[in-house]
Image (cartoon, rainbow, N blue to C red; front, side, top):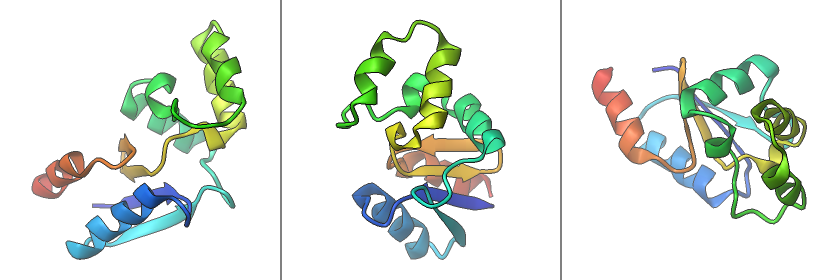
Amino acid sequence: MNIQIFGTTKSFDTKKAERWFKERRIKYQFIDMKRFGLSGKEFDSVLRAVGGVDKLVDWAGKDPDLDLLRYLGSESAKEDKVYENQGLIRLPVVRNGKKATVGYAPEQWQKWEEEG
């Protein structure tokens, strides 16, 4: 497995994800979203893996751009806005090659581990 965890040091779910992988002695790379964010290719890969921008966004967040995002008509306009403001993304984003999860998803990570 080639695990990347995109998150922030203050995100509780990111810390839980790191602990989940540490407990299983699975190596991972942590990428600080505040400093680096997702590159264009990473963003597109995660979008495809999770099934669209609506599943990527933290709709319970407090960012004022969420209101704008709710009213944007096209999917591509939403994608552009989320890429521009990656603070809208629910954390952590965990990537395993072309697969990805958003939020704390140990059930999915367990499947990845079983697949080897």
